[in-house]
Image (cartoon, rainbow, N blue to C red; front, top):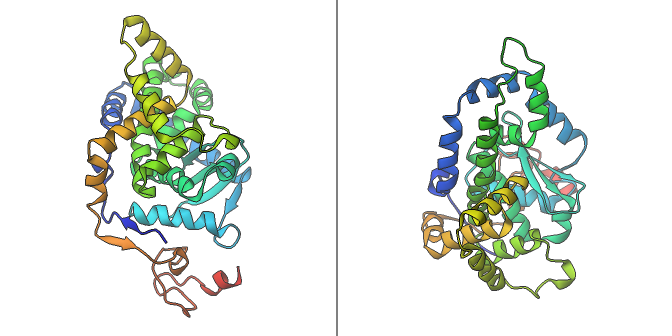
Length: 315
């Protein structure tokens, strides 16, 4: 079994991408953000999304799909997050994932991700979402992912704040939304702890068909990322790249790969990874699925939270 370092006490600022921080600072200085956030949450956006995601997707638990539930536990252990979110699968051929909920946290992955990704690549994907949660990205990301609903909520408000969701605020929100993915990618790598695995996941996200798996290498992706980065920065080219990015809710996959490879090449990934002292060597089955505390073979109940461990044997 591969050994995974547990990053005890890790702070998201240790792996936060500077583009994420800069764009978040600009977003939080944008007029109307605080009022917009309060009003939208007061009108039940989080509750609506929770009902939507939990009512239309399949919940993963230790007794039904233990191998996926174990990956969620492992990702939380590695990033030192005590609050275990619920995991759901939704029907979608593409490789997708997202997290939602500030009070009742959930992680959703697509059926396409489960079908196309290896276990380690799924660990990278789930680790990305745990990174979003740990970095407190979820509220703003919920708003960005639900702009149409947010606009509807705002349009129904009175007291002269109907135009609260202004164009500058929309642009700032969506700009940060895209760049927050860079931080999440770093979190995913810290969880799967293998740059090759992250690269393979990016290849599949970019559309590499399953029948051609292994025909395009991570080195090919690195070269493509380098070529993309070396495109001449004329004013016209800047406009084209901005326009293409504006239509895409996430940064180009190749750009994300380039940023992550650069983080690795500069030694920052190893620096953060090697801060850990504890090593996860036990099978995940020896950790309580509710509170993640270790237990001994033969224990019937978790000594920390009282979870009935005999249900694991029955499953």
